[in-house]
Image (tube, rainbow, N blue to C red; front, side, top):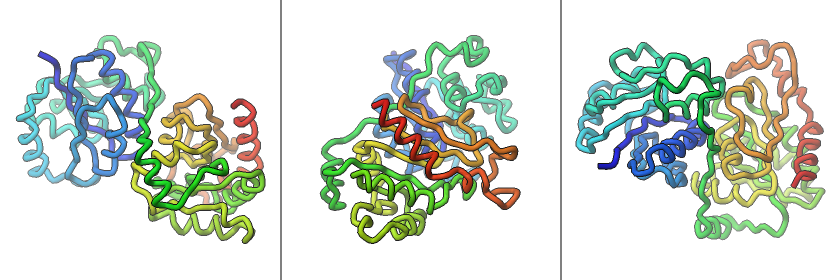
Length: 346
């Protein structure tokens, strides 16, 4: 009888994209297994673009909700699925409760928040796996084999499927065309201001690229509309017709399919950055307070840009020194140079 695996997935878009590496490895190791992933509703669009996932289950509880009774009820509902193995990706105590309540015999995860007893295949050598994607991937293999990152048999990169029909519908619905090459900009970052490259810098890149014959699509959530509008309105009036604000106008499915049409993407360290990488689009990744040594974009045609100042990376949501030099002093020309180098390699 084939194995049935439940994964408690992460809550952030970028983390969910990187999770595909784990799912690919699980299917390679257990080709007959049935793989179910439970995650917040906003991540399910990503799961639907991962052929390794047989079923996406919507997590009905919010990211910060403990709600023990609801978790117990959810666990008991899932018990009827008869899972053989649960893998818990988040580090929180509450994320390990559902597999326990579901009566799943084997429960795998990193030590995290005092999860002794909740997990019975507990891993404690997290620091031996520097990259987040390595930590995810290690959970697919036996504990005794996973000594450090060199022990991983392979590290598959995420690769999201594109729906061509949905892509055509999205182009029509948003009155877009691809007569000019598309530069996609992703100027938002849910994490906070210390990840957001200044709007004026994005506008300078947009202006340069439109003059080179490209058009600009600005992606993001509804929260990013003011930033997108600032970028567009900073352009000379005659260039604004070639700059299209998609922030707040697309579903995640549409964003994936439209971004797949990009000839170049410039993004902050964000979920959309990881989506662009998983679509194998040429990508310039702008890092401020965070570091590519932990969550790099996993793709071949990538240029990572940052400046080396004493206080970065600090991994803070807001600049603790109040100057945001790691972003303000990272000039548009550095990004334009990175774009040019990527184009030369194409």
